[in-house]
Image (cartoon, helix red, strand yellow):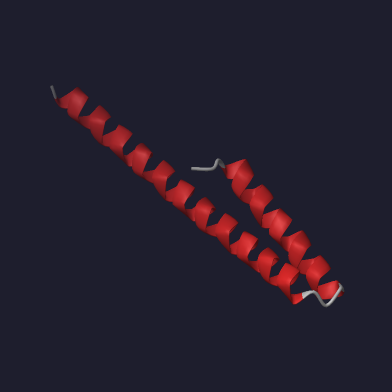
Length: 68
C-alpha cells in the first residue's frame, strides 16, 4: 500500500498528464491522467480508512488493558 505522499504524487502526475493531453488533443494521455488521478484518490481513501481502523483498534486495546 502506498503512503500518503505517494497518493498525492500519483494525483499530481495524473493532473499533469490530463492537462498536457487536453492541451495537445491527445485523448490517450488525457485518459491516462484521469486514471492516475482516480487511482491516487482511491489509494488515499483506503489509506485513510486503514489509519482510522488502526486508531480505533489501538483505543479499544487500551480500554481493555485499563479494565484488567
